[in-house]
Amino acid sequence: MSDEPTTDEPFVRPYVITAGRTIGASGEIPIETMVIARKDPEDVGADHAAVVELCATRLSIAEIAAHRSIPVGVARVLVADLTASGHLEMYETAASADAVVVRRLLHGIRAL
Image (cartoon, rainbow, N blue to C red; front, side, top):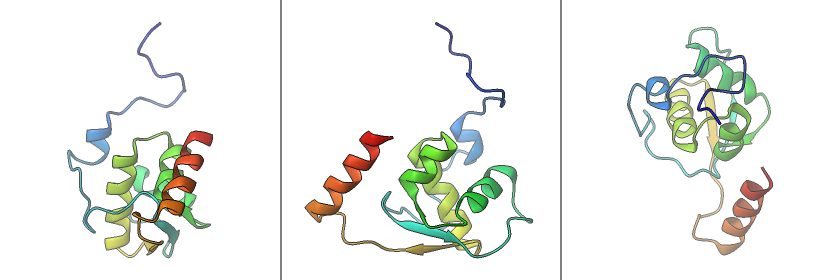
């Protein structure tokens, strides 16, 4: 078994996408936070533009990571940057300590 990517897209290490950052411009955001696009992605890089286009409908950070096949940490950084630039708008959910939210989130992640 090889470590080669299985898609036709070139493989880029996650730290290259985020410029080595683990926290984006808007700070650390929970993975269940919902986001939606507010501006066209014409003035951002390819990775950021792909997230904006994906968020034409409301998605969570976890869903963005799954759809883009990127680590959740990378999705957090991209979304934080795009929120700070006004391309995305965040909708906070119930506190992550809420057991119902945590169970739903775990169920959704396992379903991916």
